Amino acid sequence: MIGLTVLGSGSRGNGIVVQSDDASILIDAGFSSREIQRRMCTVGLENLKLDAVLVSHEHSDHVKGLRVLAKQLDLPVFCNRGTGEVIKDRGLSPDQLSLFSAGASFTIRDMTIEPFSIPHDAMDPMGFIIRTPTHKVGIVTDLGHVSRMACHHLRECDILVLESNHDLDMLRQSTRPWSLKQRIISRHGHLSNDDSMALLQQILHPRTKHVVLAHASQDCNRYDLVRKCVTANLTSWQRPDVQAYVATQDTPLPTILAQ
Ligand SMILES: [Zn+2]
Ligand SMILES: [Zn+2]
Image (cartoon, rainbow, N blue to C red; front, side):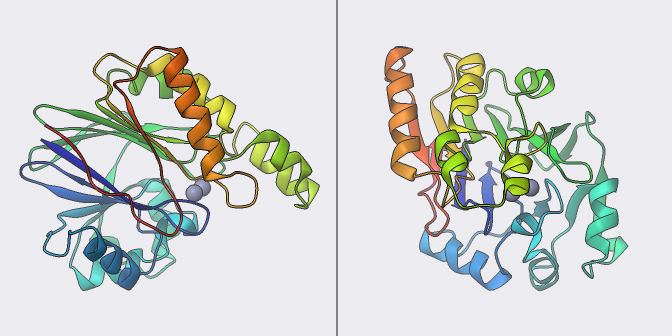
C-alpha cells in the first residue's frame, strides 16, 4: 500500500505526507508546525505518527515550520549536507539531522528513499523517489527544467507529484519585476505548465495511475487552467485511467491511495 496526501503546495508553503504499511514521512515542512498538524487533522491524519521529515531544499516555502515541528514531534530531519548547512542557521541542531547524499538510497522502515539532484536555485535541491515493497512514488515540486536525471528517476511511478508552476503568458503579462520573471523562467527556476506536460508525456507509464500537479503560482497560473491542460493531454494520450489532481495552496487534497 502507499498513501500520499498533499497538505498544500505553492510559493507560500509545501508539505506532502507519504505513508506505507510501516512508515509515515513528511516531505517538506513549509507551513507552521501548528498549520501542518491542523491540515493533517482536516484530512483524517490526526492520529498518524510521523517517523521523519525529509527536506527537498532550504527555501522557506519548504522549511518554514521545520524546526518547531521536529522539536514538538521529536522527528529526525533528513536532508543533504548543503541543505543542512543552511537550515542549521534556522536553529536546528546538528544532532537532529540525518544526512543523505544524492544518488544514495536509504531506508525508513519499509520505505526506500532515493534522493536525486534537480536543477533549481537552492543550495543542493533534491527530488525524491519513495519505494514501498509494492509501489513507487516520484516527487519533484521545484524544477528549473526537465533534466535527463529527473526523467530517469521518475520512470515507472505509480503516483507522480510534478511541478506545474506558471502559465508562460500569464507570467510574461504579470506585473512582477523583470528580474523575478527571469529567475522563474530560467533553467534553475520553476517549471511552466507546458514543460510540466512535456515531462509527464515522457515519464507516464502504464502503471502510473495518479498524477498531482503542484506548486502552481497564484498570480501567474490558475488551478482550472492546470486542470484543463492535464485533462486535455491525458485524453489525447488515451490515458483515461490516470487520475489527475491539482494541488492548491490553502486546502489539502484527500489522501491518494494505491493498493
Ligand atoms: Zn524552491
Ligand atoms: Zn518551492
